[in-house]
Length: 211
Image 1 (cartoon, helix red, strand yellow):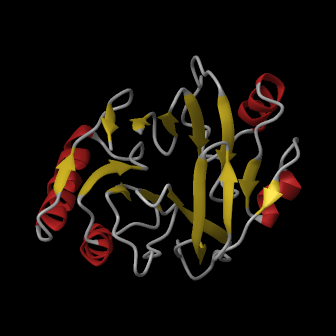
Image 2 (image 1 turned 45 degrees about the horizontal axis):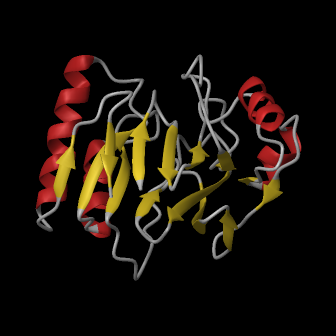
């Protein structure tokens, strides 16, 4: 399974010639070439995780690919989407998807909380969306760890990585950071990953890992 990091929260996962798309958001102006997409996951309703144009393109090019998301996102989206909740397990092509969490991390007490689902792909790759939801009882081979956000304190992100204890990790959700800030946060997440003898990979957009 090949995992490619794109801008901010957007990931593609390829296996046996098929592709799964995760969080094709507004900080990715162009999704680029895509082939054999068999499923789409949108973790929550914020526009840095999906746009109407991106979902419409995916629906037009790959009409048989199911799209999974929260109820609020499904209501707002211009295409048909399937609502999932924590505890659900579904399939998209040969990909197995298990959902965790349920709530977006708090930005501020004045801002209402919204739904968010983390997704575990093929019991190997875990992407929490905008949350620190830990997939309890799961031996995570690769963690997509949030790195920079209005809701993120780096110490809490480090605690999240420590709690998951992945074999390997890379940073995602990082567009808000300057180059200096990105380097600092990567160093902190690398330390947290290494505490369970894991390896942190400082991926840039377009970089990929095999798991």
